[in-house]
Length: 214
Image (cartoon, rainbow, N blue to C red; front, side, top):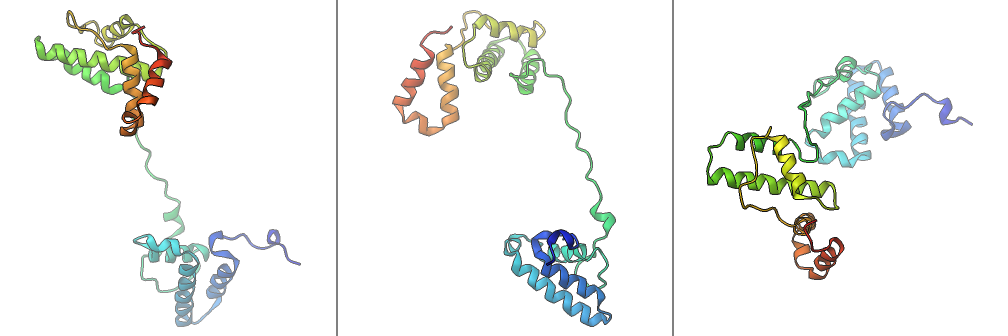
């Protein structure tokens, strides 16, 4: 009895050993026209064994590439597509350059730092005050999304000062939303519109985190 462990390794196991034997036989045929005919027949069988490839726009091209790979690039036939080479398959993709910008507080993210830079360049006035208030509210929302306990407003305002290099502070008289309101808003956003229709679930969430700011 012959075991699979004693047989040659399958190059592309998805097609099975019978297809691999057909490819090996085609490589030994001396007549070119007969080899071409065998190659087309093998391609037809490969397509039937892998119908999921038919959803791909270049599925026949992929079948021909697989045929040459299974022959260890030894099959000499006329292909309707460029014949791949061993070297072309071993080409490594170019390395992606990921941004390495330092983020002072990772739970706030890089976008908040860009918003703060924009606010620092704005002229003093109501528009800048609104921008700073919006940033502070967003800081508290991001903080509570990262740490679901609670946070003092002084902590948020202190972080705002650090991120802006002391250039930004909350407008006089402005207040941040209560921690419970921010937590519920975060949870509602995660659950989508379905959460807004379920008042029992919303009330349960409010009771869990309490009704105070701290």
